[in-house]
Image (cartoon, rainbow over all chains, first blue to last red; front, side, top):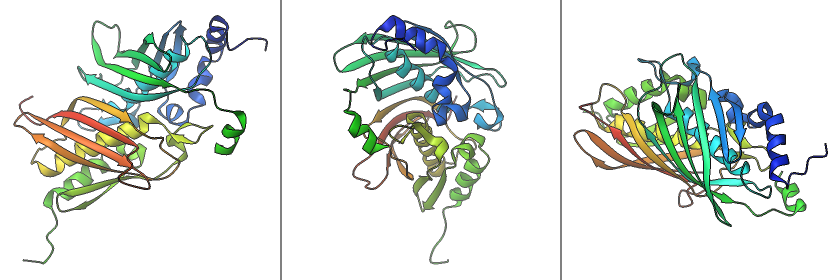
Length: 160
Length: 142
């Protein structure tokens, strides 16, 4: 592979090539079963299939809010990677979720995240969860992410 | 009168967690003493969010905290059904390591229709929380 991860366009291409792997490499995301479906500069879309095991209210079959939190948190983090000019890991500082309406039983939830501002240390993001379009949202999110400075390779080794 | 009378709502909270598929998927349990509840999320590999640094996924921690806050509201009210979440804010304060996580929720205000609740999750020391949550729930009239 000749792609240079320090070049944003090349990194976006690399991210698109590995879309399926992006959540498979994250155990909790893989366990919930969502996938990244589209990547643009600073914007990432994903899809969370409906599953019995994700139900938060057994009387109605509505998916638990925690599933939407995980989806939007993860997509927001990826939207930062899809805009930073240098490759950096980001860590969620805070995340706010507003629940507008329950998700329909049996339907996949689409997540859309956007990183709309970047400073030297922080990425600001917002996200939406819906079934069809953003006109009828299930939940919205706003999150700030800390941009981690690169660690020396030996430090990473000792943490593993 | 027995010297220790269990909170009659405790069994209902436990039943709520037991019949909620997502709480079972997380693997959380709770320990209720009177009106105090400590929620426990035993470590499991599936809860990891970052392999390289072996950190718990923020989404797993916040799901656990949201369920803890819901369970606490359910414990101290006579609601027939668990409360609905209106919104929540999560502060990720420290990295969650690959070990058990504990949480407690505190009801800041219990209104007629809405409740304001905060919750904190910790690992080794309660005074060093990993994650903090602030949430609003519908508790009636919806």
